[in-house]
Amino acid sequence: MLRTGAPVTVATAGIRIHDQHWIGGEWQAAASGESFDVRNPATGELLARVASGDAADVDRAATAARAAFRGEAWRKLSPHRRAELLWRLADLVERHAEELALLETLNNGKPLFESRQVDLPGVVENFRYYAGLADKIEGATIPVAGLFLNYTLREPLGVVGCIVPWNFPLSLAAWKMAPALACGNTVILKPAEQTPLTALRLAELAAEAGFPPGVLNVVAGFGETAGTALVRHPDVDAISFTGSTEVGRIVMREAATTLKKVSLELGGKSPNIVFADADLAAAARGSCSGIFYGKGEVCAAGSRILVEESIAGDFVRALLDRTAKMTVGDPLDPKTRIGAIVSEAQLERVLSYIERGKSEGARLLCGGERITVNGRGNFVTATVFDEVTPQMTIAQEEIFGPVAAVMTFRDVHDAIDKANRTIYGLAAGIWSRDIGKAHRLAAEIQAGTVWINTYQRYDSGSPFGGYKQSGFARDLGFQSAIDKYTQVKSVWVALDA
Ligand code: NAD
Image (cartoon, rainbow, N blue to C red):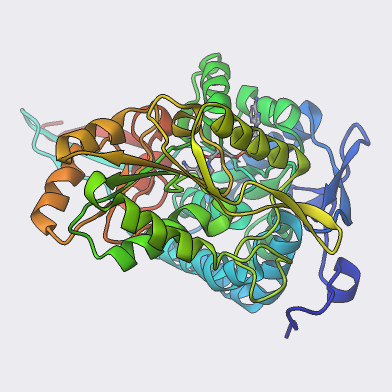
């Protein structure tokens, strides 16, 4: 059992670090021989020098994944046995949860309590949920005209490329590979260059669970090289992408050449709407965790807090009280609520948005500072601005850091107008005791997820994804996973032959 608070390094924790690609059931160095540094953002410690993938590595992975897709070991495996493999992988992840949680925290900088109590249990549950789906994928019989039997088959897409960001490295890998595998596809996973370590360890656990070689491959590397190569590869049938809206546009363009099936889970600037009739304490608590959970590096973060004018003063005071409890510090310290920003580049980005907020006239109520812990690391204090107007940069652009922009609204119509006035549509929160009003508003908000009197709830069974420029298709869910990772074949049989 890990003792939190004690100085932990990769060496002292004794965890397994892999630094090569996992292709065709074995570790493989980069074809180019190149590698890149992966660091702990809380300390700067070098965790590993990881193989840097390019087109040659992706090609090897595509060959392995195609061979596995065609091979009998996977294609002829019954759905019940596929389910069993996913369940076994869930068991292995659970058995290694402590190690994986620590590795996630060392690599991403998120507080250990988040990795341990939220991410890892979620990953285990995700594999179990999709184990349950594997043998429940059904076609239909269709009453067509004439003497024909017509039925549909739901077939896997083939080789699916899964590209994930750095904020929830293991969770988002599971969100994609679990349903893709449950549906009978083979997978090439490309983790983010900042956080490849847990995905590589997961590949090893999948092999231990009994997935045949080539069914799951992990190619580490940068977006411009490994990511682009995966999207362009003619023998990759689909791309399931989570990341920024900016890169989502590139992925869609690049995928057009081979007409790959693309699904995009992109950025957000989610409104969290607090009405005067809300339970103020609950709304302040939920709004605080809604923006500061995961250091604000959460696609669905409630980064625009819209408050009804009449309670703005009281609400902001309550929000600031809660925010004062968001201790920034060593991610391994159990008291820490905001860990290290994932990279120096991301820290600079967050700080530049804070400067932008100030220069455009928003009022900085707290935070806004870069700090170090034990003299090092990428940390920024929990930041709240009010007097924000809808056209300000911090009200429009995704900051992806612990920065809340508080705005006011007059009435329901103004709330809807301000909530929807963004290119994004990922999520929204509504706080009100008038449940009829909340439901009516939920229907008006352009977002893939609406939380009423709660925020940041996820479940493997509940579809998650965006409206507008937050993307399309859904992660999670039952039917949405089948729609995303299978294709439909219609079979006609003449009955009068
Ligand atoms: P990013 O778009 O920079 O990178 C995401 C992934 O894409 C990484 O693996 C990266 O290497 C790869 N990539 C980069 N350029 C590429 C290219 N040209 N071709 C192919 N792949 C490429 O995003 P990020 O900074 O890692 O993550 C933050 C973003 O992810 C935020 O915008 C956030 O909102 C979004 N996100 C969305 C969801 C969701 O479910 N909607 C969940 C988490 C994060």
